[in-house]
Amino acid sequence: MTEKAELRFGDQTIELDIVEGTEGERAIDIQDLRAKTGLITLDPSYANTGSCESSITFINGEEGILRYRGYPIEEIAEKCSFLESSYLLIYGELPTREQLDEFRESVRYHTMLHEDFRLFYRAMPKDAHPMASASAACASLATFYPDSLDPRDPREVEIGVHRLIAKLPTLASYAFKHSIGQPFMYPDNRLSYVGNFLHMMFATPCEPFEVDPVVEKALDLLFILHADHEQNCSTSTVRLVGSSHVNLFASISAGINALWGPRHGGANQQVIEMLQAIAAEGITGRDFVERAKSNDDTSRLMGFGHRVYKNFDPRAKIIKKACFDVLSRLGVHSKLLEIAVELEELALKDDYFVERKLYPNVDFYSGVIYNAIGTPENMFTAMFAIGRLPGWIAQWQEMHDHKHKIGRPRQVYQGATQRAVTPIEQR
Image (cartoon, rainbow, N blue to C red; front, side, top):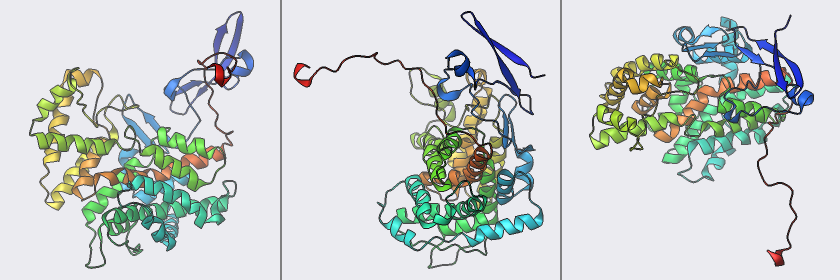
Protein backbone atom coordinates (compact mmCIF):
# COMPACT_ATOMS: atom_id res chain seq x y z
CA MET A 1 0.00 0.00 0.00
CA THR A 2 1.37 3.40 -1.02
CA GLU A 3 2.19 5.68 1.90
CA LYS A 4 0.29 8.97 1.88
CA ALA A 5 0.84 12.52 3.07
CA GLU A 6 -2.10 14.67 4.14
CA LEU A 7 -2.51 18.32 3.20
CA ARG A 8 -5.10 20.39 5.03
CA PHE A 9 -6.29 23.59 3.43
CA GLY A 10 -9.32 25.35 4.91
CA ASP A 11 -11.94 22.70 5.46
CA GLN A 12 -10.42 20.44 2.80
CA THR A 13 -8.05 17.53 3.39
CA ILE A 14 -6.41 15.71 0.50
CA GLU A 15 -4.03 12.77 0.33
CA LEU A 16 -0.84 12.87 -1.71
CA ASP A 17 1.26 9.83 -2.62
CA ILE A 18 4.75 9.40 -1.18
CA VAL A 19 7.25 8.31 -3.83
CA GLU A 20 10.37 6.52 -2.54
CA GLY A 21 13.56 6.06 -4.50
CA THR A 22 15.83 3.03 -4.44
CA GLU A 23 18.28 4.81 -2.11
CA GLY A 24 15.56 5.86 0.35
CA GLU A 25 14.90 9.37 -0.91
CA ARG A 26 11.25 10.31 -0.37
CA ALA A 27 9.11 12.83 -2.21
CA ILE A 28 5.52 14.04 -2.03
CA ASP A 29 3.86 13.63 -5.43
CA ILE A 30 2.03 16.92 -6.09
CA GLN A 31 1.18 16.40 -9.76
CA ASP A 32 -2.56 16.60 -9.02
CA LEU A 33 -2.33 19.31 -6.36
CA ARG A 34 -3.62 22.20 -8.47
CA ALA A 35 -6.41 20.15 -10.00
CA LYS A 36 -7.65 19.11 -6.55
CA THR A 37 -7.13 22.33 -4.58
CA GLY A 38 -6.32 25.20 -6.93
CA LEU A 39 -2.98 25.54 -5.12
CA ILE A 40 0.55 25.36 -6.52
CA THR A 41 3.80 25.04 -4.58
CA LEU A 42 6.35 27.87 -4.37
CA ASP A 43 10.00 26.81 -4.33
CA PRO A 44 12.38 29.46 -5.75
CA SER A 45 15.54 27.92 -7.25
CA TYR A 46 13.91 24.45 -6.88
CA ALA A 47 15.86 23.67 -3.69
CA ASN A 48 13.20 21.19 -2.53
CA THR A 49 11.55 20.25 -5.82
CA GLY A 50 12.15 17.01 -7.70
CA SER A 51 11.64 17.62 -11.41
CA CYS A 52 11.82 13.97 -12.42
CA GLU A 53 12.49 10.39 -11.42
CA SER A 54 15.88 9.31 -12.72
CA SER A 55 18.08 6.20 -12.69
CA ILE A 56 21.29 7.85 -13.90
CA THR A 57 23.14 9.50 -11.00
CA PHE A 58 22.79 9.29 -7.24
CA ILE A 59 24.16 11.92 -4.86
CA ASN A 60 24.09 11.93 -1.07
CA GLY A 61 25.40 15.36 -0.18
CA GLU A 62 25.48 14.74 3.57
CA GLU A 63 27.74 11.69 3.23
CA GLY A 64 29.74 12.81 0.19
CA ILE A 65 28.52 10.02 -2.12
CA LEU A 66 28.39 10.14 -5.92
CA ARG A 67 27.45 7.14 -8.08
CA TYR A 68 26.91 6.71 -11.82
CA ARG A 69 24.25 4.05 -12.48
CA GLY A 70 25.00 2.60 -9.03
CA TYR A 71 28.80 2.52 -9.40
CA PRO A 72 30.80 4.66 -6.90
CA ILE A 73 32.68 7.48 -8.59
CA GLU A 74 35.88 6.30 -6.90
CA GLU A 75 35.68 2.94 -8.69
CA ILE A 76 34.69 4.47 -12.02
CA ALA A 77 37.64 6.89 -11.81
CA GLU A 78 40.06 4.08 -10.95
CA LYS A 79 38.92 1.38 -13.37
CA CYS A 80 37.23 3.03 -16.36
CA SER A 81 38.07 5.40 -19.19
CA PHE A 82 35.98 8.42 -20.08
CA LEU A 83 34.42 6.64 -23.06
CA GLU A 84 33.53 3.68 -20.83
CA SER A 85 31.83 5.97 -18.33
CA SER A 86 30.10 7.77 -21.22
CA TYR A 87 28.74 4.46 -22.49
CA LEU A 88 27.58 3.60 -18.97
CA LEU A 89 25.68 6.86 -18.57
CA ILE A 90 24.10 6.77 -22.03
CA TYR A 91 23.27 3.07 -22.33
CA GLY A 92 22.79 2.16 -18.66
CA GLU A 93 25.44 -0.55 -18.29
CA LEU A 94 29.21 -0.81 -18.53
CA PRO A 95 30.22 -2.00 -22.00
CA THR A 96 31.76 -5.32 -22.89
CA ARG A 97 35.07 -5.16 -24.73
CA GLU A 98 33.26 -5.59 -28.06
CA GLN A 99 30.68 -2.91 -27.24
CA LEU A 100 33.37 -0.45 -26.17
CA ASP A 101 35.40 -1.10 -29.33
CA GLU A 102 32.33 -0.47 -31.50
CA PHE A 103 31.48 2.70 -29.57
CA ARG A 104 35.04 3.99 -29.76
CA GLU A 105 35.26 3.31 -33.49
CA SER A 106 31.97 5.11 -34.14
CA VAL A 107 33.15 8.13 -32.17
CA ARG A 108 36.47 8.14 -34.04
CA TYR A 109 34.64 8.02 -37.36
CA HIS A 110 32.75 11.23 -36.57
CA THR A 111 35.56 13.41 -35.14
CA MET A 112 36.14 15.50 -38.29
CA LEU A 113 34.10 18.64 -38.94
CA HIS A 114 32.69 19.86 -42.23
CA GLU A 115 35.24 22.15 -43.90
CA ASP A 116 32.80 25.04 -43.85
CA PHE A 117 33.24 25.21 -40.08
CA ARG A 118 36.53 26.95 -40.78
CA LEU A 119 34.54 29.80 -42.31
CA PHE A 120 32.18 29.71 -39.31
CA TYR A 121 35.03 30.39 -36.88
CA ARG A 122 36.73 32.95 -39.09
CA ALA A 123 33.54 35.02 -38.99
CA MET A 124 33.92 35.35 -35.22
CA PRO A 125 36.07 37.95 -33.43
CA LYS A 126 39.45 36.72 -32.22
CA ASP A 127 38.50 37.47 -28.62
CA ALA A 128 35.22 35.54 -28.77
CA HIS A 129 34.83 33.46 -25.62
CA PRO A 130 35.26 29.73 -26.42
CA MET A 131 31.95 28.94 -24.69
CA ALA A 132 30.11 31.38 -26.97
CA SER A 133 31.80 29.80 -29.98
CA ALA A 134 31.17 26.25 -28.77
CA SER A 135 27.49 26.92 -28.08
CA ALA A 136 26.94 28.55 -31.47
CA ALA A 137 28.86 25.81 -33.28
CA CYS A 138 27.00 23.06 -31.44
CA ALA A 139 23.62 24.53 -32.42
CA SER A 140 24.81 24.91 -36.00
CA LEU A 141 25.47 21.15 -36.23
CA ALA A 142 21.72 20.90 -36.86
CA THR A 143 22.24 22.69 -40.18
CA PHE A 144 24.98 20.29 -41.28
CA TYR A 145 23.29 17.08 -40.13
CA PRO A 146 19.55 17.26 -40.88
CA ASP A 147 19.48 13.44 -40.88
CA SER A 148 19.75 13.27 -37.06
CA LEU A 149 17.29 15.83 -35.72
CA ASP A 150 14.17 13.82 -34.82
CA PRO A 151 14.16 13.04 -31.06
CA ARG A 152 11.49 10.38 -31.65
CA ASP A 153 13.63 8.35 -34.07
CA PRO A 154 16.03 6.06 -32.11
CA ARG A 155 18.42 5.67 -35.06
CA GLU A 156 18.65 9.41 -35.67
CA VAL A 157 19.18 10.01 -31.96
CA GLU A 158 22.02 7.47 -31.77
CA ILE A 159 23.78 9.00 -34.77
CA GLY A 160 23.39 12.45 -33.21
CA VAL A 161 24.75 11.20 -29.88
CA HIS A 162 27.89 9.72 -31.45
CA ARG A 163 28.42 12.81 -33.59
CA LEU A 164 28.18 15.12 -30.59
CA ILE A 165 30.60 13.14 -28.43
CA ALA A 166 33.03 12.97 -31.34
CA LYS A 167 32.78 16.56 -32.51
CA LEU A 168 32.55 18.66 -29.33
CA PRO A 169 36.32 18.31 -28.63
CA THR A 170 36.99 19.37 -32.23
CA LEU A 171 34.62 22.33 -31.91
CA ALA A 172 36.21 23.41 -28.62
CA SER A 173 39.77 23.10 -29.92
CA TYR A 174 38.89 25.11 -33.05
CA ALA A 175 37.52 27.88 -30.84
CA PHE A 176 40.83 27.92 -28.95
CA LYS A 177 43.01 27.86 -32.07
CA HIS A 178 41.00 30.68 -33.63
CA SER A 179 41.42 32.83 -30.50
CA ILE A 180 45.23 32.58 -30.61
CA GLY A 181 45.61 32.78 -34.40
CA GLN A 182 46.98 29.27 -34.91
CA PRO A 183 45.88 26.94 -37.73
CA PHE A 184 43.20 24.37 -36.95
CA MET A 185 44.48 20.85 -36.44
CA TYR A 186 42.59 17.98 -37.99
CA PRO A 187 41.72 15.09 -35.65
CA ASP A 188 44.21 12.23 -35.58
CA ASN A 189 42.10 9.12 -35.11
CA ARG A 190 45.12 7.01 -34.22
CA LEU A 191 45.03 8.71 -30.83
CA SER A 192 42.70 8.13 -27.90
CA TYR A 193 39.69 10.37 -27.35
CA VAL A 194 41.51 12.58 -24.84
CA GLY A 195 44.85 12.29 -26.67
CA ASN A 196 43.17 13.52 -29.84
CA PHE A 197 41.75 16.52 -28.02
CA LEU A 198 45.17 17.43 -26.58
CA HIS A 199 46.66 17.08 -30.07
CA MET A 200 44.04 19.42 -31.58
CA MET A 201 44.56 21.92 -28.75
CA PHE A 202 48.33 22.10 -28.53
CA ALA A 203 49.89 20.70 -31.72
CA THR A 204 50.90 22.82 -34.71
CA PRO A 205 51.70 21.76 -38.31
CA CYS A 206 55.32 22.89 -37.93
CA GLU A 207 56.61 20.34 -35.47
CA PRO A 208 55.77 16.95 -33.99
CA PHE A 209 53.62 16.77 -30.89
CA GLU A 210 53.58 13.90 -28.44
CA VAL A 211 50.76 13.42 -25.98
CA ASP A 212 52.08 13.06 -22.44
CA PRO A 213 50.41 9.94 -20.98
CA VAL A 214 50.21 11.43 -17.46
CA VAL A 215 48.50 14.57 -18.76
CA GLU A 216 46.25 12.41 -20.92
CA LYS A 217 45.27 10.25 -17.95
CA ALA A 218 44.60 13.30 -15.74
CA LEU A 219 42.38 14.95 -18.35
CA ASP A 220 40.51 11.68 -18.94
CA LEU A 221 39.96 11.55 -15.18
CA LEU A 222 38.67 15.13 -15.07
CA PHE A 223 36.20 14.33 -17.85
CA ILE A 224 34.96 11.29 -15.91
CA LEU A 225 34.45 13.32 -12.73
CA HIS A 226 32.51 15.98 -14.64
CA ALA A 227 30.42 13.50 -16.66
CA ASP A 228 27.15 13.86 -14.74
CA HIS A 229 25.93 15.43 -11.55
CA GLU A 230 22.19 14.86 -11.33
CA GLN A 231 19.74 17.77 -11.82
CA ASN A 232 22.13 20.73 -11.79
CA CYS A 233 21.47 24.00 -13.64
CA SER A 234 22.80 22.96 -17.06
CA THR A 235 21.33 19.45 -16.91
CA SER A 236 17.93 20.84 -15.95
CA THR A 237 18.29 23.28 -18.85
CA VAL A 238 18.97 20.45 -21.31
CA ARG A 239 15.90 18.59 -20.02
CA LEU A 240 13.63 21.64 -20.10
CA VAL A 241 14.70 22.73 -23.59
CA GLY A 242 14.54 19.13 -24.82
CA SER A 243 10.98 18.77 -23.52
CA SER A 244 9.86 20.98 -26.41
CA HIS A 245 11.04 18.16 -28.73
CA VAL A 246 13.73 20.34 -30.24
CA ASN A 247 16.73 18.42 -31.62
CA LEU A 248 19.59 17.18 -29.44
CA PHE A 249 22.13 19.68 -30.84
CA ALA A 250 19.98 22.66 -29.80
CA SER A 251 19.34 21.17 -26.35
CA ILE A 252 23.07 20.65 -25.73
CA SER A 253 23.82 24.16 -26.99
CA ALA A 254 21.45 25.48 -24.31
CA GLY A 255 23.24 23.38 -21.69
CA ILE A 256 26.60 24.83 -22.75
CA ASN A 257 25.24 28.34 -22.22
CA ALA A 258 23.95 27.44 -18.74
CA LEU A 259 27.31 25.87 -17.82
CA TRP A 260 29.12 29.03 -18.87
CA GLY A 261 27.89 30.96 -15.82
CA PRO A 262 30.38 31.70 -13.00
CA ARG A 263 28.01 30.10 -10.47
CA HIS A 264 28.17 26.82 -12.40
CA GLY A 265 30.93 25.61 -14.74
CA GLY A 266 32.85 28.87 -14.61
CA ALA A 267 33.74 28.37 -10.94
CA ASN A 268 37.12 26.69 -11.63
CA GLN A 269 38.21 29.77 -13.56
CA GLN A 270 37.36 31.86 -10.50
CA VAL A 271 39.53 29.58 -8.33
CA ILE A 272 42.56 30.15 -10.56
CA GLU A 273 41.94 33.90 -10.63
CA MET A 274 41.76 33.89 -6.82
CA LEU A 275 45.03 31.94 -6.50
CA GLN A 276 46.74 34.22 -9.03
CA ALA A 277 45.56 37.31 -7.13
CA ILE A 278 46.93 35.93 -3.84
CA ALA A 279 50.27 35.16 -5.50
CA ALA A 280 50.46 38.57 -7.18
CA GLU A 281 49.73 40.41 -3.93
CA GLY A 282 52.28 38.33 -2.05
CA ILE A 283 50.02 37.63 0.94
CA THR A 284 49.83 34.35 2.83
CA GLY A 285 46.98 31.87 2.67
CA ARG A 286 46.15 32.70 6.28
CA ASP A 287 45.84 36.40 5.42
CA PHE A 288 43.37 35.58 2.64
CA VAL A 289 41.36 33.20 4.81
CA GLU A 290 40.95 35.94 7.41
CA ARG A 291 39.80 38.32 4.68
CA ALA A 292 37.25 35.78 3.46
CA LYS A 293 35.83 35.49 6.98
CA SER A 294 35.51 39.25 7.48
CA ASN A 295 32.16 40.94 6.92
CA ASP A 296 34.06 44.08 5.96
CA ASP A 297 35.89 42.47 3.04
CA THR A 298 34.49 41.26 -0.31
CA SER A 299 37.09 38.50 -0.69
CA ARG A 300 35.58 35.03 -1.10
CA LEU A 301 37.24 31.63 -0.78
CA MET A 302 36.39 30.20 -4.21
CA GLY A 303 36.17 26.42 -4.72
CA PHE A 304 34.74 25.75 -1.25
CA GLY A 305 31.17 24.74 -0.53
CA HIS A 306 28.58 23.18 -2.79
CA ARG A 307 24.84 23.46 -3.31
CA VAL A 308 24.42 19.71 -2.68
CA TYR A 309 27.49 18.47 -0.79
CA LYS A 310 27.54 19.25 2.93
CA ASN A 311 30.57 17.03 3.31
CA PHE A 312 33.72 16.55 1.22
CA ASP A 313 33.02 16.52 -2.51
CA PRO A 314 34.23 12.97 -3.41
CA ARG A 315 35.53 14.26 -6.74
CA ALA A 316 37.82 16.78 -5.03
CA LYS A 317 39.80 14.04 -3.26
CA ILE A 318 40.42 12.25 -6.56
CA ILE A 319 41.42 15.41 -8.42
CA LYS A 320 43.84 16.51 -5.71
CA LYS A 321 45.98 13.39 -6.21
CA ALA A 322 45.86 13.77 -10.00
CA CYS A 323 46.96 17.37 -9.61
CA PHE A 324 50.15 16.36 -7.78
CA ASP A 325 50.81 13.59 -10.34
CA VAL A 326 50.57 15.99 -13.29
CA LEU A 327 52.77 18.69 -11.80
CA SER A 328 55.34 16.12 -10.71
CA ARG A 329 55.41 14.57 -14.20
CA LEU A 330 55.74 17.93 -15.90
CA GLY A 331 58.42 19.05 -13.47
CA VAL A 332 56.36 22.15 -12.72
CA HIS A 333 56.82 24.06 -9.49
CA SER A 334 53.42 25.63 -9.03
CA LYS A 335 53.05 28.53 -6.64
CA LEU A 336 49.31 28.27 -7.25
CA LEU A 337 49.24 24.66 -6.04
CA GLU A 338 51.20 25.62 -2.92
CA ILE A 339 48.64 28.33 -2.14
CA ALA A 340 45.75 25.95 -2.84
CA VAL A 341 47.11 23.33 -0.44
CA GLU A 342 47.69 25.97 2.24
CA LEU A 343 44.15 27.32 1.83
CA GLU A 344 42.66 23.84 2.08
CA GLU A 345 44.61 22.96 5.23
CA LEU A 346 43.67 26.24 6.91
CA ALA A 347 39.99 26.09 5.98
CA LEU A 348 39.54 22.48 7.12
CA LYS A 349 40.79 23.42 10.58
CA ASP A 350 38.95 26.73 10.87
CA ASP A 351 35.70 26.68 12.84
CA TYR A 352 34.21 29.34 10.56
CA PHE A 353 34.36 27.04 7.52
CA VAL A 354 33.77 23.77 9.41
CA GLU A 355 30.56 25.07 11.02
CA ARG A 356 29.29 26.18 7.61
CA LYS A 357 30.29 22.83 6.06
CA LEU A 358 32.46 24.54 3.46
CA TYR A 359 34.71 21.82 2.05
CA PRO A 360 36.76 21.84 -1.18
CA ASN A 361 34.66 21.03 -4.25
CA VAL A 362 35.53 19.68 -7.69
CA ASP A 363 36.53 23.14 -8.96
CA PHE A 364 39.21 23.74 -6.35
CA TYR A 365 41.99 21.65 -7.90
CA SER A 366 40.71 21.10 -11.47
CA GLY A 367 41.71 24.61 -12.52
CA VAL A 368 45.26 24.02 -11.27
CA ILE A 369 45.54 21.01 -13.59
CA TYR A 370 44.16 22.93 -16.57
CA ASN A 371 46.56 25.76 -15.83
CA ALA A 372 49.56 23.43 -15.50
CA ILE A 373 49.03 21.85 -18.94
CA GLY A 374 48.91 25.28 -20.59
CA THR A 375 45.16 25.82 -20.91
CA PRO A 376 44.06 29.47 -20.81
CA GLU A 377 41.44 30.32 -18.21
CA ASN A 378 38.70 31.02 -20.75
CA MET A 379 38.96 27.41 -22.00
CA PHE A 380 38.35 25.80 -18.58
CA THR A 381 34.59 25.78 -18.91
CA ALA A 382 34.70 24.50 -22.50
CA MET A 383 36.69 21.51 -21.25
CA PHE A 384 34.14 21.05 -18.47
CA ALA A 385 31.45 20.94 -21.18
CA ILE A 386 33.23 18.10 -23.00
CA GLY A 387 33.22 16.09 -19.79
CA ARG A 388 29.59 16.89 -18.94
CA LEU A 389 28.31 16.02 -22.44
CA PRO A 390 27.52 12.30 -21.86
CA GLY A 391 25.52 13.18 -18.74
CA TRP A 392 23.50 15.80 -20.62
CA ILE A 393 22.82 13.26 -23.36
CA ALA A 394 21.77 10.54 -20.91
CA GLN A 395 19.43 12.92 -19.09
CA TRP A 396 17.93 14.16 -22.37
CA GLN A 397 17.30 10.59 -23.50
CA GLU A 398 15.76 9.59 -20.18
CA MET A 399 13.43 12.60 -20.29
CA HIS A 400 12.17 11.44 -23.69
CA ASP A 401 11.93 7.79 -22.59
CA HIS A 402 9.71 8.86 -19.69
CA LYS A 403 7.55 10.84 -22.14
CA HIS A 404 7.60 14.02 -20.10
CA LYS A 405 5.24 16.80 -21.08
CA ILE A 406 6.76 20.08 -22.16
CA GLY A 407 8.26 21.81 -19.12
CA ARG A 408 6.10 24.67 -17.86
CA PRO A 409 6.80 25.98 -14.32
CA ARG A 410 4.06 27.95 -12.57
CA GLN A 411 4.48 31.25 -10.72
CA VAL A 412 2.89 33.30 -7.96
CA TYR A 413 2.06 36.64 -9.57
CA GLN A 414 2.91 39.68 -7.41
CA GLY A 415 2.40 42.49 -9.92
CA ALA A 416 -0.27 45.14 -10.37
CA THR A 417 -3.90 44.06 -10.45
CA GLN A 418 -6.13 44.97 -13.40
CA ARG A 419 -6.00 48.63 -14.37
CA ALA A 420 -7.07 50.77 -17.31
CA VAL A 421 -4.71 52.25 -19.89
CA THR A 422 -4.53 56.05 -19.73
CA PRO A 423 -4.23 57.68 -23.18
CA ILE A 424 -0.72 59.00 -23.81
CA GLU A 425 -1.94 62.63 -23.87
CA GLN A 426 -3.11 62.27 -20.25
CA ARG A 427 -0.06 60.55 -18.76
